[in-house]
Image (cartoon, rainbow, N blue to C red; front, side, top):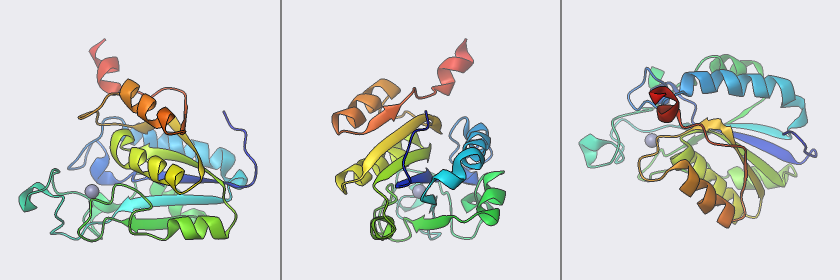
Length: 199
Ligand SMILES: [Zn+2]
């Protein structure tokens, strides 16, 4: 799976407590995902030009919340437990050189790591050409981050097993097709937890 030059960054999207099984907007499988991403990073961290962690970092009255007419339950409010990284990634972030990107701080959905941030400038400046995207949710913030990265001219790989989705408006097959049609390389398969559980 891993074959890259020293021009590659990995973006870990929104692996935060409110998206874990104990949070207000749970994405099934996120606690396991945090462990899997930590193992991946520990194995390959010296090979990445940059390790970027994004976090949804909403003001407490953000328009994306249902109580304000939005789509989602209240989640990832700045400075709360819910906005923290899911263990053991919380520890990883403190002990390694990573860049944290706060997003969706204002009146925007902020699904993408590149929306309202200067992440693309930073990555270009240090010589990144290729971006690997992992995290949650596959069909929202991971999707939007991968598409924006591609549109900004980066080579993009989405490592599907290192994501988890909510699959409300799309399914893994449609998402894969949408991303591949845009020139994004989808590595391996999305895990659809619900199906696994029903067996
Ligand atoms: Zn949010």
